[in-house]
Length: 137
Image (cartoon, rainbow, N blue to C red; front, side, top):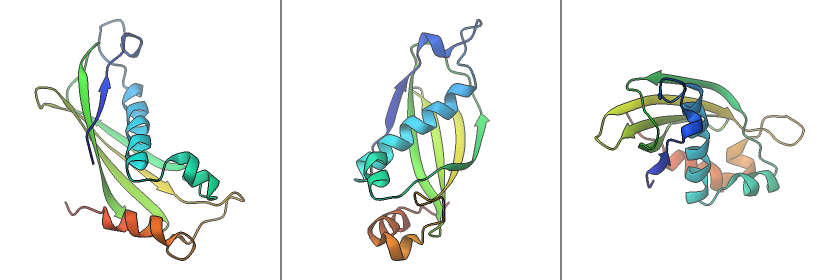
């Protein structure tokens, strides 16, 4: 996937000029939306198909702080997908290559009634895509 870039906004920083920790989670959401778009599955298409994918877990490991106007490169990889649970990894790097943050999010797939979807049977094209994107660490 092409790297998603986020420019740190002034409102995302605290009084010390450092990005507030909560914003990294927002950036993960931004990057995930772009990631799904790039593979032909934007959220609106998923929802029209009756697929809802709530976050079930999220984790961030902060490595180096970021500040106003810095450009952060965010890459996403699929770590795990078994049809029900999807685990994504995010790496956020500064322009000098320093790792700013490493994060993970986990998601499940539900229908409009809140029941788990059997992705392989009900949405085989999305199932195959996510399976093909799994990377080995």
